[in-house]
Structure formats: C-alpha cells, structure tokens
Length: 214
Image (cartoon, rainbow, N blue to C red; front, side):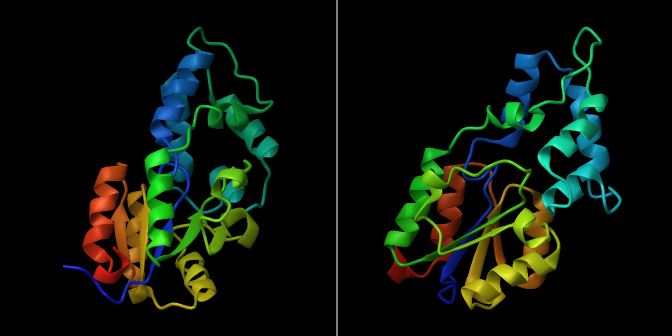
C-alpha cells in the first residue's frame, strides 16, 4: 500500500548511488596490500555508534579538516601485510578510486524524476569530489555535509534538507545504506529505506510512492 502523501525521495551518495563502500575498501586494501583489520579498527573507533564526538571522521564530514589532514591522521593507523607503513599522500583518493557508479540506482533516480517525484541528495562528504557530470540534473536539492557543517545522523541536517525542499518529514522518504542514518530519519518522521541493492530499494520505493507517480 502506498503512502500517497510522499512526494520526494532523498538519497545518500556513497554506497547507495555507488557500489558498496565495503567492496571499495576490500578492493583498495587488496590492491595496496593493506591489512584490512587495521582500517577496520580505525573505522570502528572513529565512526561506530559509540565513537565520541569530534573524531577525525566526524571532523572530515563536517568540513572542519580537509582530506590531506585526515589522510595524515589515518595513515599511521594502517599497516601493510608485511608490517610496513602506508603513504598518506592521496590516501582517500586511492580508496575512492575503487568506488564505481551504480548504474541501476542512477537510472532509478532518473525514472523517479520522470514520474514527477522530487529528488534530493543528502551526503556525508569524505573530502572527495562528487561526479557532478554524472549527477547533474538528477536532484532538485543537494546537501553535502562538508558544505553545511553538519553530518548524518544529526537531525539538523535532515531538517535542513526538508526545509530546502519545503516539505514536512511525512512528505519524504530517505534512502541510505547506514542503519544509524536510517534510524535517525525515522525518528524525525521520515519514511526510510535501508539500501542493500537496487532491486530491493526499487521495490521499497514502489510500495511507498503514490500510484500516480508510477
């Protein structure tokens, strides 16, 4: 049964409109011979639900530090399979080089726009450039964490996105691959979809969107 009051879909970028971050990380660590557990330990300490405020990832996502400063903090935490260091220069760029567009999800966004659904992008930035040549024309509103000094799951960044759309939470659905971000959206009254793959997200949105937009 559709929720006919929903008129907009808000999408995360990395891991939703791209291949999964987990796969990119696996490909990157394999390509550079990095021990995956050294990256996972840093990620858990800096990004888990129990992470304190102000970790390097938090500061990167809110634009308080840039990519190279973050790289300088992350590189010493990493080790190669032979125990050696990992070069900090261009570290995030090398990671994101293994992330690919998800053509099925980009097509889904285009289809929604063609059907009259309003679309927005809400993304926590990791200091890298977005492929605006690919994303151009897909979104009515874009909210990038590093530009606004807020990051998901802070409720203020969802409210800001809704304000720019001129909508209430009940009028939008949010799609993200991170459970904490989905839960925060739901707590604000948005309908939310935890993204795992394009087919499941398409089915979930079909169940939520009003009939006349299909």
